[in-house]
Image 1 (cartoon, rainbow, N blue to C red):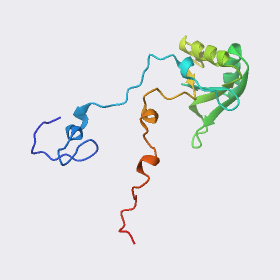
Image 2 (cartoon, helix red, strand yellow):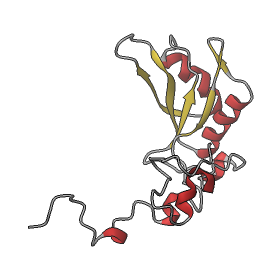
Image 3 (cartoon, rainbow, N blue to C red):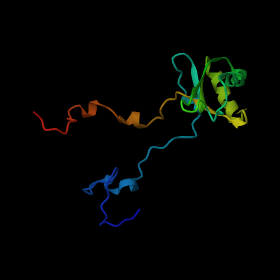
Image 4 (spheres, helix red, strand yellow):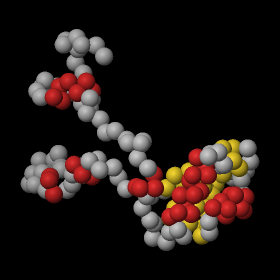
Length: 159
């Protein structure tokens, strides 16, 4: 980025008044960071009926039976859902599989990490529902309505 003080910048992260750390814009470097080193099993959350995993890189011509047969080796698959593209009629490239037990779902995810293939496509998988990382936006109170309860959201003049 250019450091010319005569250049006016607009947009998110630039304080036009030049006050405080926001005036440094993106140079302040305060970004949320995803912790990729965390174990996916430790942050998994059970859905209402079971443990749901998302399998990606599913071949567009795969069927539910083929996907079910591939994952029945790792546990009892309660349900399998393949979303189809309305325009083409082919699979969108992902499947949602529901397992009764967490260890079964974890075994299926591990199998995908170890190179499980379906129709010559290497599958990837992870839990569909996970806990947010500690110290993230939820912990900081982002999106809280109580903090701004007295603020009027309307730009119209009051009555």
